[in-house]
Length: 260
Image 1 (cartoon, helix red, strand yellow):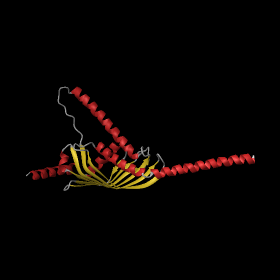
Image 2 (cartoon, rainbow, N blue to C red):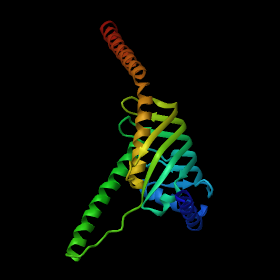
Image 3 (tube, rainbow, N blue to C red):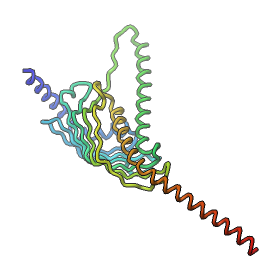
Image 4 (cartoon, helix red, strand yellow):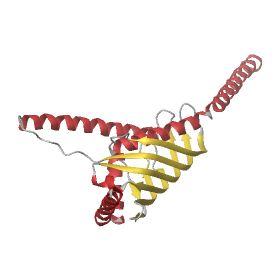
């Protein structure tokens, strides 16, 4: 009987979602939310829904780079599949049982410590700081206006992801600091992140921050593998240039000595 009841709840939840969240609405809403959150242009391609298994499939999510780094696209996520717990759609915390991203193209510009991906982390951190300040201000105003009364503030929807699997990560990295590496083509086999948001869930802003941080750490480690060889190259180049400069100075001295 309990199983039948749970199935009914799931069916009701999925029916509500199908009525309220059509692919077109999901596409426009996610595009708007992501653009506002990341503070850069985000375009979302095709979106499809499967009522039976609570699956959302999205293709071609493109995130524009920040002007301070380049005018190209920073990220292109080719195919995303989210398996959602239907019952969680009736609560304030949406649970994604499995989130798979098949194919990410990253065009990274900047230094090891300051680049396009760290800029996303910076933007998300500022968003969170601003939100905390706004909530504190709201709480103070509410306390003053409703002193002695029980007043509940509407909670934001949170999300939690039990497992995120990212496959086929291709990186075009143009690193300028600490050495100018030019553009290097790199690959990561994949990235697996568990339990995003914990038991209670987190805001979309903080969920993206967790994923971006993990992706940035993995890419940074891959790029740093190139640095010892690049360092040796730079040092050798410097010695040769210094040698040529010294040789030219000696030659000039001899010419001045014997031919002036």
